[in-house]
Length: 162
Figure 1 (tube, rainbow, N blue to C red):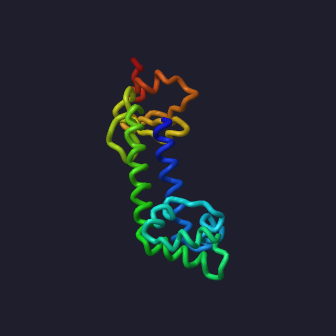
Figure 2 (cartoon, rainbow, N blue to C red; figure 1 turned 90 degrees about the vertical axis):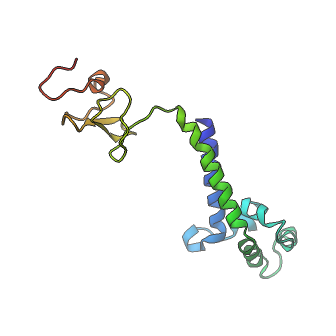
Figure 3 (cartoon, one colour; figure 1 turned 135 degrees about the vertical axis):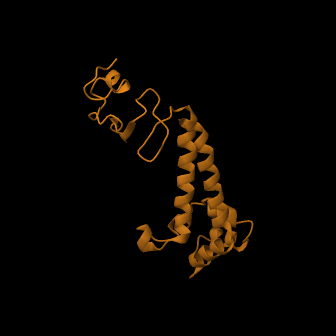
Protein backbone atom coordinates (compact mmCIF):
# COMPACT_ATOMS: atom_id res chain seq x y z
CA UNK A 1 0.00 0.00 0.00
CA UNK A 2 3.04 2.26 0.40
CA UNK A 3 3.56 2.28 -3.37
CA UNK A 4 -0.10 3.11 -3.96
CA UNK A 5 -0.04 5.98 -1.45
CA UNK A 6 3.26 7.36 -2.69
CA UNK A 7 2.26 7.39 -6.35
CA UNK A 8 -1.26 8.65 -5.80
CA UNK A 9 0.06 11.32 -3.43
CA UNK A 10 2.57 12.51 -6.02
CA UNK A 11 -0.14 12.63 -8.69
CA UNK A 12 -2.35 14.65 -6.34
CA UNK A 13 0.47 17.09 -5.54
CA UNK A 14 1.30 17.65 -9.20
CA UNK A 15 -2.35 18.36 -9.98
CA UNK A 16 -2.40 20.78 -7.04
CA UNK A 17 0.70 22.47 -8.46
CA UNK A 18 -0.99 22.79 -11.87
CA UNK A 19 -3.95 24.55 -10.26
CA UNK A 20 -1.62 27.35 -9.17
CA UNK A 21 -1.31 28.23 -12.89
CA UNK A 22 -4.79 27.40 -14.14
CA UNK A 23 -7.17 28.69 -11.45
CA UNK A 24 -8.02 32.10 -10.11
CA UNK A 25 -7.22 33.47 -6.69
CA UNK A 26 -10.92 33.17 -5.78
CA UNK A 27 -11.00 29.49 -6.78
CA UNK A 28 -7.74 28.64 -5.01
CA UNK A 29 -8.37 30.53 -1.78
CA UNK A 30 -4.82 31.87 -2.07
CA UNK A 31 -3.13 34.14 -4.61
CA UNK A 32 -2.62 32.43 -7.98
CA UNK A 33 1.09 31.86 -8.53
CA UNK A 34 1.85 31.95 -4.82
CA UNK A 35 3.95 28.78 -4.96
CA UNK A 36 6.19 30.32 -7.60
CA UNK A 37 6.29 33.70 -5.82
CA UNK A 38 7.35 31.88 -2.62
CA UNK A 39 10.22 30.19 -4.46
CA UNK A 40 8.65 26.72 -4.80
CA UNK A 41 9.72 25.33 -8.14
CA UNK A 42 6.93 22.86 -8.86
CA UNK A 43 6.58 20.43 -11.78
CA UNK A 44 5.05 22.98 -14.19
CA UNK A 45 7.93 25.40 -13.54
CA UNK A 46 10.57 22.71 -13.90
CA UNK A 47 9.07 21.65 -17.24
CA UNK A 48 8.86 25.28 -18.39
CA UNK A 49 12.44 26.31 -17.55
CA UNK A 50 14.15 24.65 -20.55
CA UNK A 51 11.43 25.93 -22.88
CA UNK A 52 11.33 29.50 -21.54
CA UNK A 53 14.85 30.57 -20.48
CA UNK A 54 13.70 34.05 -19.44
CA UNK A 55 11.74 32.36 -16.65
CA UNK A 56 15.08 31.61 -14.98
CA UNK A 57 15.92 35.34 -14.95
CA UNK A 58 12.58 36.19 -13.33
CA UNK A 59 13.07 33.54 -10.67
CA UNK A 60 16.65 34.64 -9.97
CA UNK A 61 15.59 38.22 -9.35
CA UNK A 62 12.72 36.93 -7.19
CA UNK A 63 10.04 38.74 -9.22
CA UNK A 64 11.29 42.07 -7.92
CA UNK A 65 10.14 44.15 -10.87
CA UNK A 66 6.58 45.16 -11.66
CA UNK A 67 4.83 42.47 -13.69
CA UNK A 68 7.52 39.79 -13.18
CA UNK A 69 5.22 37.29 -11.53
CA UNK A 70 2.50 37.66 -14.17
CA UNK A 71 5.12 37.32 -16.91
CA UNK A 72 6.45 34.16 -15.27
CA UNK A 73 2.94 32.70 -14.95
CA UNK A 74 2.29 33.38 -18.63
CA UNK A 75 5.62 31.81 -19.65
CA UNK A 76 4.71 28.63 -17.78
CA UNK A 77 1.19 28.59 -19.26
CA UNK A 78 2.43 29.15 -22.83
CA UNK A 79 5.35 26.71 -22.70
CA UNK A 80 3.33 23.49 -22.75
CA UNK A 81 4.58 22.73 -19.25
CA UNK A 82 1.06 22.43 -17.84
CA UNK A 83 0.31 19.55 -20.21
CA UNK A 84 3.70 17.98 -19.45
CA UNK A 85 2.95 18.13 -15.72
CA UNK A 86 -0.55 16.77 -16.30
CA UNK A 87 0.96 13.80 -18.16
CA UNK A 88 3.37 13.21 -15.29
CA UNK A 89 0.45 13.21 -12.82
CA UNK A 90 -1.32 10.64 -15.02
CA UNK A 91 1.81 8.47 -15.04
CA UNK A 92 1.96 8.50 -11.24
CA UNK A 93 -1.76 7.76 -10.96
CA UNK A 94 -1.38 4.81 -13.35
CA UNK A 95 1.67 3.60 -11.43
CA UNK A 96 -0.43 3.51 -8.26
CA UNK A 97 -3.03 1.10 -9.67
CA UNK A 98 -1.00 -2.15 -9.73
CA UNK A 99 -0.46 -1.81 -5.97
CA UNK A 100 -4.21 -2.36 -5.52
CA UNK A 101 -4.00 -5.83 -7.09
CA UNK A 102 -3.03 -7.30 -3.71
CA UNK A 103 -6.47 -6.40 -2.34
CA UNK A 104 -9.26 -8.96 -2.55
CA UNK A 105 -11.95 -8.29 -5.14
CA UNK A 106 -15.17 -6.69 -3.92
CA UNK A 107 -18.58 -5.92 -5.30
CA UNK A 108 -20.53 -2.69 -5.10
CA UNK A 109 -23.99 -1.88 -6.36
CA UNK A 110 -22.44 -0.73 -9.64
CA UNK A 111 -19.93 -3.58 -9.96
CA UNK A 112 -20.94 -7.08 -11.10
CA UNK A 113 -17.98 -8.88 -9.52
CA UNK A 114 -18.87 -10.84 -6.36
CA UNK A 115 -17.16 -10.30 -3.04
CA UNK A 116 -14.94 -13.32 -2.39
CA UNK A 117 -16.52 -15.52 0.25
CA UNK A 118 -19.83 -13.66 0.34
CA UNK A 119 -23.10 -14.84 -1.06
CA UNK A 120 -23.15 -13.98 -4.81
CA UNK A 121 -26.15 -11.73 -4.13
CA UNK A 122 -24.32 -9.63 -1.55
CA UNK A 123 -23.83 -5.97 -2.28
CA UNK A 124 -21.40 -3.73 -0.43
CA UNK A 125 -23.43 -0.90 1.08
CA UNK A 126 -20.44 0.85 2.56
CA UNK A 127 -16.86 -0.37 2.34
CA UNK A 128 -15.80 2.05 5.09
CA UNK A 129 -18.44 0.81 7.53
CA UNK A 130 -18.08 -2.79 6.30
CA UNK A 131 -21.83 -3.17 5.83
CA UNK A 132 -23.22 -5.79 3.48
CA UNK A 133 -26.68 -6.81 2.37
CA UNK A 134 -27.70 -9.87 0.44
CA UNK A 135 -29.87 -8.45 -2.31
CA UNK A 136 -30.70 -11.91 -3.64
CA UNK A 137 -32.17 -13.13 -0.37
CA UNK A 138 -33.33 -9.81 1.10
CA UNK A 139 -31.63 -10.64 4.36
CA UNK A 140 -30.80 -7.95 6.87
CA UNK A 141 -27.74 -5.77 6.64
CA UNK A 142 -24.68 -7.21 8.31
CA UNK A 143 -22.00 -5.04 9.83
CA UNK A 144 -18.58 -5.76 11.29
CA UNK A 145 -19.98 -6.08 14.82
CA UNK A 146 -22.22 -8.99 13.83
CA UNK A 147 -21.18 -12.57 13.19
CA UNK A 148 -19.08 -12.45 10.01
CA UNK A 149 -19.57 -16.19 9.49
CA UNK A 150 -23.30 -15.59 9.12
CA UNK A 151 -22.70 -12.97 6.45
CA UNK A 152 -20.37 -15.26 4.55
CA UNK A 153 -22.93 -18.05 4.43
CA UNK A 154 -26.03 -16.05 3.59
CA UNK A 155 -29.17 -18.16 3.11
CA UNK A 156 -32.68 -17.06 2.23
CA UNK A 157 -34.72 -15.91 5.22
CA UNK A 158 -36.35 -18.88 6.85
CA UNK A 159 -33.58 -21.39 6.07
CA UNK A 160 -30.68 -22.33 8.28
CA UNK A 161 -27.18 -21.04 7.59
CA UNK A 162 -25.10 -24.07 6.91
